[in-house]
Image 1 (cartoon, helix red, strand yellow):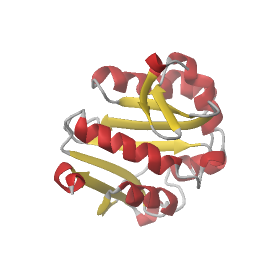
Image 2 (tube, one colour):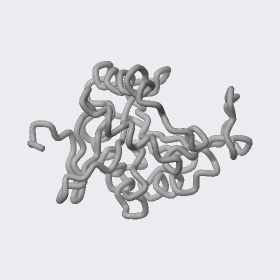
Image 3 (cartoon, one colour):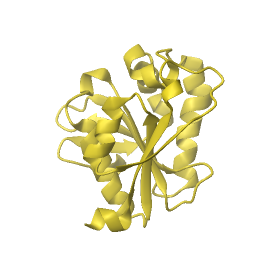
Length: 187
């Protein structure tokens, strides 16, 4: 992968913008029930849904908000696909308060990749994209993701409840939001 495709580089990761040709990587990632546990209750995302909904939505975020979007993560030394990250304004939120997110293959869990990529994106948001606040959300029961948010420097902000059409196990405990303001990040 050439430097021209690189959005962000860390010690161990290369993040590049999602492209049309990433559909199979996304299908592979979303086919693991463990990866999808806190998103769909473990139900895989179909190839058709990736092609008609997921990928177009990911591509649209990069076009709608310059500097923001969805980014495929590769392990720098091997080039191995690890998953994706996003840094994007919420659909109904201010452009200077982007949401951080990530979804990594099970093989990449527990190795610090989510924290490493998230910290780099938070830094980019505050230093290059003029963000005033970065936030992330997950299910309250998703302790792994909550740990990543804490290690990234985000702090617990609130618990909230969503009225899901088809709630999955743990939905009754709500969703949590973590955030970090630029002034807190500077410290």
